[in-house]
Image (cartoon, rainbow, N blue to C red; front, side):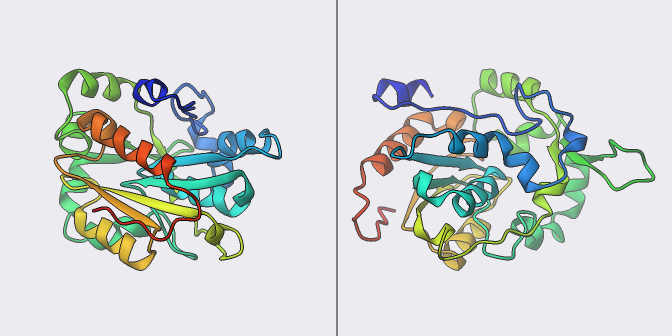
Length: 243
C-alpha cells in the first residue's frame, strides 16, 4: 500500500465480510453476495464519472469477477494476483479441484474445517493450521511479515467459494483483465495458474519469479512495479503480454 501511495496512487484495502477488521460472524456468510458486500457498497458509492481498478488476491479473484458482473461501468481494469479467475458457471473451489486428489493428504494436514453451526450441519469455513501456514502461503516471505499475517488471518467462508459464478460478455466481459503469476506458489501451482490464463485469457499477463502466494510480502517491489505498469496502460491498447 505505501509503495503505491508513494507513486501518487490512492489505494484502498477493503476487508471482505468477516475478514480483517470486519467483525461479522463468518458463519453467517452464506453466499458470494454476502462476502462481497463491502466491495459492492464501495462501488455503489462512487460518483457516476469515477472508476476504479480492482485488485484481487487468491480467492478474492472470484469477488473481483462478481463485482465486474455487477458493476462493470465502475471498473476500468481488474488485476488478478495469483487469484481465482474462474469461467462462467465455475466455482472458485474448482480452481483447486485438479490438485486435491494428489495433494489430499497434505491438505488434510494443513487445514481443517470449521463447523460453526454444529457438527450436525455442513462446515461453514476453512481455517489453516498455523504450524503449516508458512509452507503453504509464505515459503518465500520474510519472517516478520509471516508473524503478523498468521496473527491476523481469519477463517475462510466455505459457501462463497462453493458458489458458481454467473459471468456474461455484456458485463464481466467488457472490463480489461490482467493476471499476475507467482512462480514459487505452494497454494496455486504454476500449472493451475497457466490453466486459468489459457482457459480464460486476460488482456495481459505478468510473472513474478521467486514469489510465493503472497507477493506483497515476498516480492513487494516487483508487484508494485507491475501494478503501476498496469495503471499506465491506455484502455485502448491491444493485448499486452510482457512476460
